Amino acid sequence: MRIDTAAGSILCDPWVNPAYFASWFPFPDNSRLDWETLGNVDYLYVSHLHRDHFDAEHLKRFINKKATVLLPEYPTSQLEDELRELGFTSFLRTKSDEVHELDGGLKIMIQALISPTDGPIGDSSLWVEHDGIRVLNQNDARPTDLSRFNELGHVHAHMLQFSGAIWYPMVYELPDAAKTAFGKQKRDRQFDRTWRYIDDLKADHVFPIAGPPCFLDDELWQFNDIFGDEGNIFPDQAVFLEEYAKVGGTNGIVLLPGSVTSLTAAGEAETTHPVPVDEFFANKQAHLEEMRERKAPIIAAEKASWRHPEIDVLGELKKRIEPLLEESIYMAQGVGGPVRFDFTDSFGPTGEILESIVVDFPGKQVRPYAGEKVRYRFKTGRALVEHLIHIDEGDWVNSLFLSCRFSAARIGQYNEFVYAFFKCLSEERLQYAEGWYDEHEKAVEAEDTQFGDWTVQRRCPHLKADLSRFGVVDGNVLTCQLHGWKFDLPSGRCLTSVGHKIRASKTE
Image 1 (cartoon, helix red, strand yellow):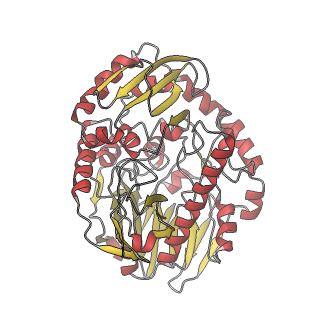
Image 2: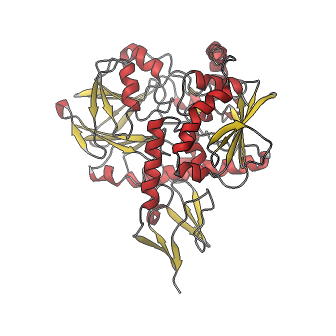
Image 3: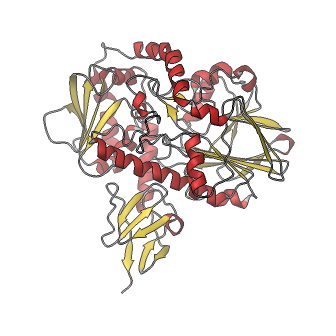
């Protein structure tokens, strides 16, 4: 998205090239836009390091290196470091939740979220004001509330996520009926969270962005929402408008690549499109099939680069991961057991298993699988792990897992520490995450909120969402609607994941 004002232009998260082992592509396709012109901007904003937002190849080739980068206040320097490697030299290091006034009266504020589970160690939203018009690009970010943005005045345009951006439940080894049921629950939660944010901000106009990727590789084609599957977590913008209308929403505006919306301080919005929106989505499958054929050589070229049979996978993982296991306290305890990886001869979970290894968190070692029972198991192509080692990738979540080129199985509940650890395969990230968990675990939640005759700590133990706004009680179960986490009130036990006990008491 590009925001143009009389005081300057801001390009936000330009993503064109495939991400995550060539599994995700932008839809609708934006690769044929005039990027030479669009990239000639005054300011660049990259919300976070997920590769469907940080497109290094595109940034290097098309975006003006004289642009000033509006940098979120993140705990690590990785975003700035990677942008500098691409040739950017001018940075405005913002302070989270502080308004910064730029030339010509242009004002911006970036709210940074910095828990280990926010994006790849961080996510953010951008607020912009010029000449009395205010825009919030919330993008993928999931703040506990939008009160800070409301304090700054009425917002005219609200851009936010509405669709899935994860691998659950599609990759899990579950019966089809269970997978559909879990997917439908997630799809419903996504929309519920979106309606909550829209109601919080009450902007004049709502723009569904950070929408679904599309999957053009034949092995992943089934993940596209074109088969009438109510459990598909990737609904598109047309579905958003249908669902939004069911809850009374009438101010949604869908943008296609090349669409332009002009806003006024009076709350008016005039939008032009390169093609009719309804017609475009009515022909979605045809557009996807055309893209699949056109992008096939790109996928083939990427696949050809992944295999590195000369790499000793077990030996290299021991070298990289064992020192981190030695230093990990909270995440190692949180995982609490061995995690098994089966490596196949394909580019995904199908095919013959060539090698099985275990990341043994209690034992602090990486070793061959010895046939023991494990609670967490992943199966993926050995070539993908060879490539991760070859490029020294420090974040398997922002590469392997988001690719959906794996299968997963677990016994018992979801465990966030498993995924948190595998996004922290560097000294800097590991130390930050361990420190965050240390501070988080020691924080005392003194403030309470009331649900009937239940007194409950006000902040969710997961990511501190305000339960007085996001909490719903059904019987003895409390659900935090921000992320869908559930708690058994009589015992305080988290029903969604390991750990994260809640403090609750019932009035006698």
